[in-house]
Length: 279
Image (cartoon, helix red, strand yellow):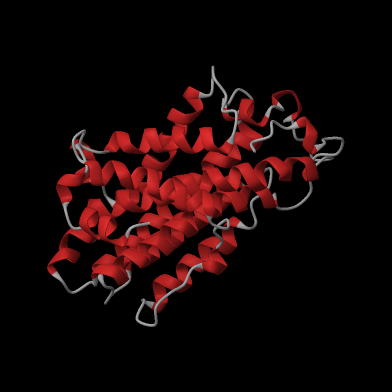
């Protein structure tokens, strides 16, 4: 990732098109899921042949948020995707908080991660209710830097909506097109006898993008500072969409890693060879 491109992008609100510039942190997760809805629609007919194909598809969807002539914004779509697919899968424990980051936001975000770890076949509503309660606490905290709050709320929103998305993909909607990517649409019918306890592969995939959003949001704030004129733009919608640019490919990369392999472990009789490989 070229830091100069990222800083320039965050500091220039005109980099993104139309309604994107009015995004609120709490809407980050909805945009995240919209990207995956577009990806699922694309894969309803033509599946990717490799991870490289998936990377290109995600990048093309993300660059759709940019003004057509803005090359810096369009470059970020590809660079962020390449970065997340090339890195280790993000986890909550890997988020690096600077010493001056608000301790309440940090603790609350980690609580969200712990809640997501408990996701199982039947408790989606309980988990999402918990995430929403913690998010409300983050929103109401006093003496919090506005940019830090924007990063935390955006990451929390992505955690919430990503949890809904991937639970639906894996155990909810039997007709979801992302199941075709797994190549196992006929063996996705979970039963209580087949799966016990938390579904690790769901929280790993859902948590990867939330952690990536938080980590890269912190990196942005550290790069530009929170007390400069640039920060006025940074804690607005431009920062929100920038986090989405890192979160989406992080989740997709985790899906290709933990989601596919995890199913072979979680469901008796399924072999990894039954799952569409993404070399």
